[in-house]
Length: 485
Image 1 (cartoon, rainbow, N blue to C red):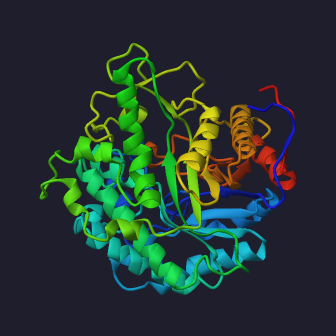
Image 2 (image 1 turned 90 degrees about the vertical axis):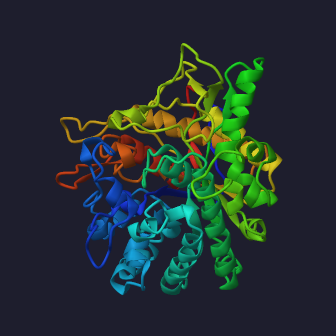
């Protein structure tokens, strides 16, 4: 990885990201009804401290000041998600009052020369749809299209960048296989059913939005239509051990290829289908019974951009290992299952790398390898890093500042890793820092701080950290000075 001064190209998009449930608050205002996260957060032991998103960062009321902060930090784009239960409460008729918030937000962003980068789904399924089966029910995919078109009706004249789903791996496998995330179901291969219906929802929405001209206007080239996937780099702990090699294959298939292959190749990975198709699914013979004729053609509808979320890779073993990395999900005290279908034997092994407050190893070179792999193995469109960041135990100093040198180093290293990939021919066009604000970190509640801006949850005071100033300088110049590595 380069440690010398580097320059990103003109027009490279610098942004930061949030998600509706993590920052908005106003959980019961202006007609919004419960999502699966409102419900899950009330399950005893599901979220550390019993934390919930009722107030979060109060972005719903403080958005104008937050947008002013974005401008101050030289951000060219803001990646935000729309709350489905705010726009179509209980998956019913359009709620004008809920949509009006996003009207105001988009106008405020445009007035401050910040590109609105809209994500339609960041995990907050209306509880009413979960009660009808959630993502294991095919009808949910069609209800998603109804919702997506309602948002486009309101914002399509001003928003050019449309992302269907954020991290469907988390929605499907943490939600329906492992139970770590809402709705908290632990149903094995039913997570693959949920994954298929999420992909179907994506493809159907792409077709409908494309039919409305999204991504076809040369005067609005910001991004067009896309999806954001989260990725790992799955390395066998011992490349000479066939057991470890096979374990890494399975994790790669169930994390990366189960989404990449249907989107870009129009099929599910044959090895993963062979591994899983005989596993029982409630109410079905096999999860593959959920795949209907024409589904994969819909799912593989062409997209304009692929969002890449990368935090770390993994060294993977297929048998017990003394350096096993224990999952920090058990901090909640709730019993969960592996999110990797049929992979109870898989072990994640420490490589002795530095770790974040999430106990995730810091592996920037994995980002380079991931981006190059996407270029070499898949016919991917232009790429954007739509999430990259780290949680650390930040504290406010006596002078009121927040110094976070570990996060500065993390950002610097991953930007260099991204640039290295560009030097190898990867068409990477932007980078979004996760996250703009400290916020609700799902099952970890408010115990993990990912923001480049510190949030005092009692007063809602925002304090840009050292990392925010560092990132602002990079966003203003596109330049990274020399580093010690």
